[in-house]
Amino acid sequence: MTDKASIKHIKHPSPTSPEQRAALMQNPGFGKVFSDHMVTMKWTAEKGWHDAEIKARAPFSIDPAAAVLHYAQEIFEGMKAYRTKDGIALFRPEENARRLAMSAERMAMPAVPEDLFIEAVETLVRTDADWIPDGDGSLYLRPFMFASEAFLGVRPASEYIFCVIASPVGAYFKGGYKAVTVWVSDDYTRAAPGGTGAAKCGGNYAASLIAQAEATKNGCDQVVFLDAAEHRWVEELGGMNVCFVMDDGTLITPPLGGTILPGITRNSILKLAQEAGLKVEEKPYSIEQWRKDAESGKLREAFACGTAAVVAGIGAVRFRDGSFSIGNSGDGEVTARLRADLVGIQRGNAADKHGWVRLVK
Ligand SMILES: *Cc1c(COP(=O)(O)O)cnc(C)c1O
Figure 1 (cartoon, helix red, strand yellow):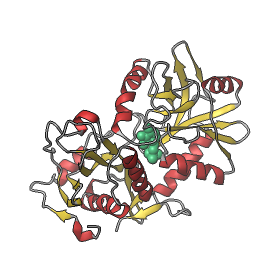
Figure 2: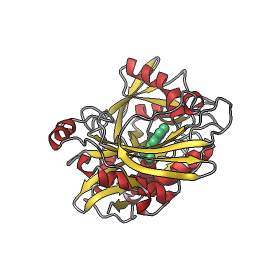
Figure 3: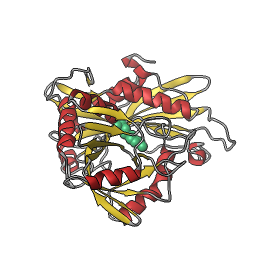
């Protein structure tokens, strides 16, 4: 199952023409344009993973009683393939494989073995290599798994589908790397102790959309979620982790611990920050403190980080009865430096000391 020949190629009957593809990739936005193929495989309790295929991207045919449609047993990953001078590169894909396995465990789903995950992703990237944009763009990869068993009883399903699709993307935030404004959600929390906050599951997003809509209504780009118990400690944004840069050269980020998604960008940034001479502290940081430090100038910069948006400065924070701004309200020096360090490695323009880059052969 895990050797390269195990993913069966089914010929695409009508691939996109080069002209059409070029037109689609001119200004792809985020997650709206998709490549020609997809990888799928099935899991059943008797057979384990089987029927791995790469074929024309097409709608699924699933039973209306498929468990995912009722009880949301679904998990996903987000990663990117880059065109570099050395070839096509993935960034720490083993970490995505491990995290998918962790999410699977939390959601009572079967794990996809790491080598099979990587093979699925690489097969899609190789097959749809023409869909990787040049320049600042990348091919966003979306591996995901859902419960396909037709059964309305409540228990972990006994049949699953794992799939990988790909989408050429430009910048995540419209207008490129400009600082974002965030909305502090008063009414809603994202994750509670004992819940699924550390799993990358669709259900977390379903629960966060109303807060994201509120943020948009209030002219903000993203939501900041506070902890569920005290409604005081900053956890993360809707789909990104958050870091604070203080005037004494400390970088603070909320600690992982079950309610925060363990971002691969977060982990990479913490290492790069240490190497850049910052003192990294994973410790709770409250919204009152955030405001106080921003107003006193102790807080120099804040930024959000994740695969999709990479690193985005936070210029201002709004909440129901007020707002405050951070630093120069724009992209801070440390934010820009850490982004440049990370992007340099991802795009093959800086030394890969950590062995984070994997070239797709
Ligand atoms: C995916 C995700 C992140 C960022 O993780 P990366 O591995 O850095 O892309 C942060 N928060 C949430 C809620 C996420 O779903």
